[in-house]
Image 1: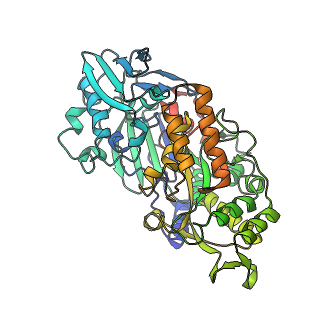
Image 2: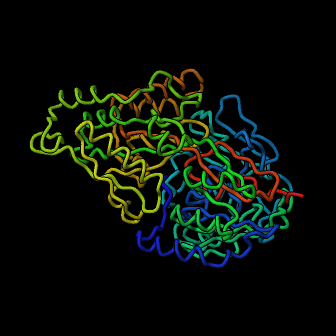
Length: 524
């Protein structure tokens, strides 16, 4: 899902940039036992019941399992990896002994059951519920949790990184509106102490954390929507670290007190093409746009090489990527596709059909320079094929109601199994379900292949299903896939233990060099 930002108008952002140069440092910045990190957005909620931390690495919560640096699964709240029945329909987890929530209450199997049953309840507004579709039931058996599945689902263990919440704290209230959403209680290495919406979130170390008390005692996530302002605050010492676009990160290359980290990702930058829009709903327009874009140039010029061309939803180095679908810009073929469909060159070189110009609006979020530059490059390439793309900035609050009608420079991507990201992005049953399948793409071939991939057990057969999906997206694009971006961070070089993982689209509060901040040690 595209993260929500609360970016202000450009004028306000510029005023903030000026103020940042003289503003005092965030409390804790530069201190040995504290870290202040600038991120571009904040979550709507800190409740896993509504989707927070679904891919793991939440600092407030733990799942039954977790990912290590190489994204291999390891035990977390569970003592070991699950026991799996021969038919692949039953998964049994045994809980770790002596784990307590940050309020001192004991973790029990009932808490695990409560968490999953609440997420699966249709009344709970969890946009990622479809990723748990295979679950038929979950029950507590002493210190064990037993999941029963409707069908064998090969990647199920990776879905049990879902953070566990305490029934005694989250039960008895509406999961959609209750106080737990902003005042969470978990088993994780950190505890939320303050949340000033639009400004910052502050966390303190949990001294009773089952994995050992963290040495970084205070973590502040400063919400700084504008990229330039974030870089300015980092340079002034107001921040210890920040998420930055590659071109702004490059300005710190000669700063010996700071270090740059580049994380490869599944985070794809793409243009949604609403099927209900009379222009973007035309398959010929969508194919021509796909052929018009110069992905290599965007990687080189917009990302300064910190990324890869995207020929579909999966990165080219992923084992599930379909070889042979790579394609270069081909304006001549784009023209032929449009000619055959009746889109003829008109005024100013913009094509038209039946009196309608090949013109549409492309929205991108205020303050996000990387998306802005993607949008402008895309519009420039499209114009060469006779398609007018009117790039327009807006806040996410303005963009969200318009996603059914207007194109959006969006971001998606989940690590791990292809089912995790592709199903929610493409399956017709999720068309119009918030940010899921935001363009309302419908393709029976894709639906059938996604269903087969989800329910299959044989690796080769599943690979064939996802090959079908990726080839179908070339013939009938639901999106124009542009780049898989690297996530770039710059941090003060004061701690040992910083590493990166391959990251999903969601980052800032979990993924990043701070994914394992509870294990950092001050440099000596």
